[in-house]
Amino acid sequence: LNEGWERPTKQRLLVVANRLPVSAVRKGEDSWSLEISAGGLVSALLGVKEFEARWIGWAGVNVPDEVGQKALTKALAEKRCIPVFLDEEIVHQYYNGYCNNILWPLFHYLGLPQEDRLATTRSFESQFASYKKANQMFADVVNEHYEEGDVVWCHDYHLMFLPKCLKESNSDMKVGWFLHTPFPSSEIHRTLPSRSELLRAVLAADLVGFHTYDYARHFVSACTRILGLEGTPEGVEDQGRVTRVAAFPIGIDSDRFIRTLEVSQVQEHIKELKERFAGRKVMLGVDRLDMIKGIPQKILAFEKFLEENPYWRDKVVLLQIAVPTRTDVPEYQKLTSQVHEIVGRINGRFGSLIAVPIHHLDRSLDFHALCAVYAVTDVALVTSLRDGMNLVSYEFVACQDSKKGVLILSEFAGAAQSLGAGAILVNPWNITEVASAIGQALNMPADEREKRHRHNFEHVTTHTAQQWAEFFVSVLLPTVATFPSDFVE
Ligand code: ADQ
Image (tube, rainbow, N blue to C red; front, side, top):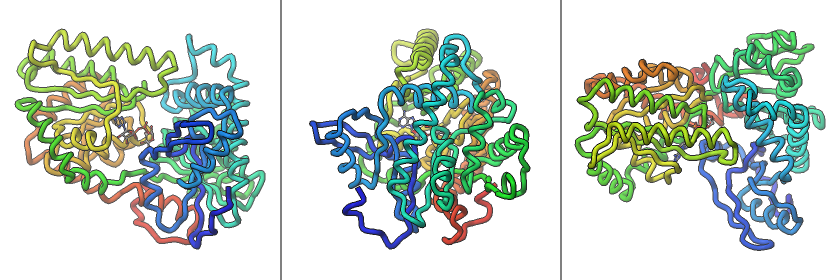
């Protein structure tokens, strides 16, 4: 694969994440079509100009045959991506099992599997073994492509074992690891059977990053309490070796959102939406359909608001756009039915022949449509039960410079630490509090909306995804530019 790659003059950054930033669809025995999925991480890394980035990750498809693997590897190379091939059994045990059924709920304070998830607990050992095996497979691909002086940046809870695997094969390799979810209180992490092994594996990295200072603090106290290690102002010390631990709050490519609002097609769409919802205030929820996003709780709070405020019943609409994820997992299927059931009940209760109070879509919107919807919204409801950061809140703010709508934001989203002064902060578990925040937002005077929006807009446009990525890498390898000191909380 290295054939045909010229050694770039810039330093190389190997970004390792569970999923590559492309979707691959097989068109024939040896042909693939690829589509870049424009997520936050992709746009963040596109902005890192000092480095020549390469992606290493799973393409999200099972490719059992060599012909297919070779063809996909070649196609991906053009996008600077390098695949890790995982078979179905590994995906089942490592990804669906240990990552999504154990670590994801635990890191979001939903605890370890209970009742119908108990079956998973019984296979915990084998899932953890697969997790380690999968991490080693990622490490093998990194080692194959690593050249002296490269910087390796590992991402998220899927790859907590990777720093250890990499350092075992090359202790000189510069390795950073960043967690996109919360890191829970050490009391929660303590319940994980593999708690010590995972912490030690992460500590093999040179730099460990989190979205907020609280998550970094939880990680350090887990290392202190569980491993008996020393927490220092810089991070965690183990026998004279210090792993630096710090907060690097992510951002978005705010310019991309602001520029897109000027596109004529988007302007047209904004006009249509305004006509469609004329005379009604628009409230918006945009989430992956995941239990951490608190969608049922949000809708119940909206119901309570309508119940208590008959005046608003035909003057407000909630657009809830929930893109389905992990659709083969029974718990997610249950969540979908639960949301449908609540929406149906509320629309039956408060709807009329002409309009319903909730428009619920089970799908993702394309980027233009998403920007248009953000722009026409009066009140955004981000009520995650826990969320590492939550980029939807940032995207909404970026698209609101003419409307200056209100953001209702969960105090359990990392974003509460950066947008808290401009948003109305709520405890998403408290439906009465969220219902009253809806009333406050809908009735907020224009000057207060302006003031709150200004605070958030300033933050979102000055703490971007590009700065986040450049800053992390510059701390990992302090040879590049310096960044504003307030970027780390
Ligand atoms: P996510 O849990 O995916 O990310 P979030 O940060 O909100 O959560 O990002 C979701 C992205 O998907 C946003 O860019 C949003 O626009 C898009 N999206 C969601 N629903 C959509 C829909 N229906 N249609 C179109 N687009 C949709 C994880 C962590 C977060 C952390 C990020 C980045 O869980 O806490 O902020 O990583 O680190």
